[in-house]
Length: 269
Image (cartoon, rainbow, N blue to C red):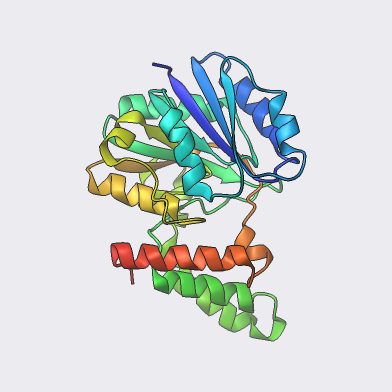
């Protein structure tokens, strides 16, 4: 059994592949690792770049089209042999301390099934990457904020929406810079203990794009595993939120469909 399996999925990600893989391989060079890359039907130069990294410990699998996040990651999960499985987004730049810190925490906290660390963008702004589980109320606030934020004369109303939405996040705990238990950490960085996968199975493939990460953490928690956020370790995440780019795009509707499925499945209204 390997110490670590890293799962990366790509979809037209040519601008991110090299910085992600180069930083990752540097961060885990002293670990007995495998990297499993699953491409979701890219049509740019992503596959050409990925192929240059294929080796004895780095494998590449191709899906003929975009099958969604859960199906692509499940292909990797079925192949993973690591004691720990690290799910990462391709638009990340990894720090060695993140792996060493998170794995050390898992080794000293046997009840921790999943953990994540602090993520920040290229401007140094911290991403809200640990949250309470999604509800219809929180989603409505998110949509209202996205709609109201660009309109100058509605700033006051927008500020009220932001205040109402504050309970979705863990801002106070993050500021303390100490590990704490959360409801879920986003799939851009989830270090998962192998026993969790053996216990609860794979990601829910009814969810094409979000919130498969929240669903997985919720299922792990119900099975008796704890989920932690470690703000004292961090790395960069460019955060491609596809649903924010075009509010009425196909991806936005797929995301909304997945959320409705999640709300009904877990009665999160």
